[in-house]
Amino acid sequence: MDQVTSDADLEVEIPAISIQLATQIGGTRSLTLTTGIRLDSAPDQINRALDKIVAAADRQKKKFDLEQTRQLLKNEEQNLHLHRQQIAAQQTAFEMEFAKSGRRGDWEPKGSQKGILDGLNKNVSNSVDRIKQLRDSISEMEKECR
Image (cartoon, rainbow, N blue to C red):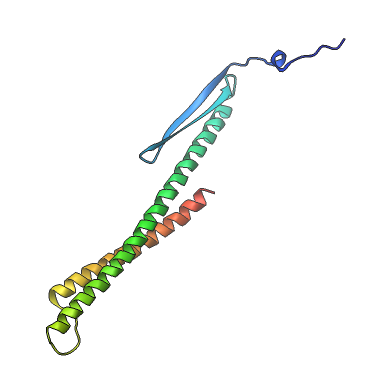
């Protein structure tokens, strides 16, 4: 007569240890990864398991950082648009003021008006530089997250 065995009959208890890695991802998120490994594992097997867990945690952190950087880029692009609108509005206001004054010739920014417009143009330049930096960072981060 054949004997039927169940999975429970085949189970063998092997002592194991649990490896857990907890890391912060951003200011408000944390990630905990857990795995088990046989207690009789060789040190190189334990190290490989640890390396895999650390690599997985690092990748998740990089993905989070990538999303944060994409949001910074979006914000900076909105700032650039706003800075350009501010220049146009300020220049129009200065030109209207010049026209109302009855002076002859073409308006050119001088003195405090030139200083104001120079400051606004500097804001545009800073935003353009920041956008380029963020785009470069995103490109590198995307490569690392593959």
